[in-house]
Amino acid sequence: MQRLSFKMKLNKGQKEAYKERHDQLWPELKQLLKENGVSEYSIFFDEETSTLFAFQKVSGDGGSQDLANNDIVKKWWAFMADIMQTNPDNSPVSVPLEEVFYMP
Image (cartoon, rainbow, N blue to C red; front, side, top):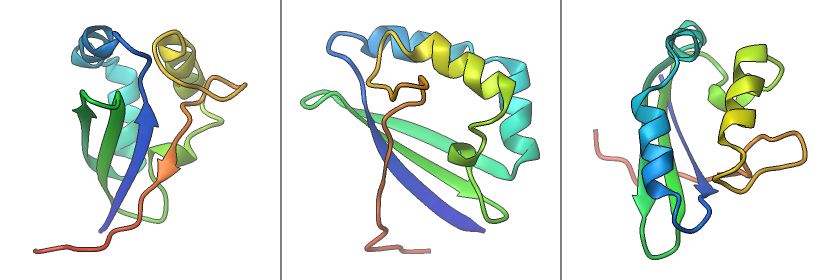
């Protein structure tokens, strides 16, 4: 089991919209993530910087960031593009983070 983390940037004033959309996460997206080894997925918000910090437990070699060619993921990215920083393909601007401490 690997632990992955990355950060993304939310547009100012979009915390509630982001939270609401994730509270109503599409069942087909949740199923896709689980089928691709994502067993846990948490996202935290830094109010001061509008930075999102994501953490995943993943079995296998990939994570949610490796599903870019899936139509469900592309549709989700388009749905979220108006409230966060994105790349030209609507994928979130995502920066992987290095784990520097772990206490099991």
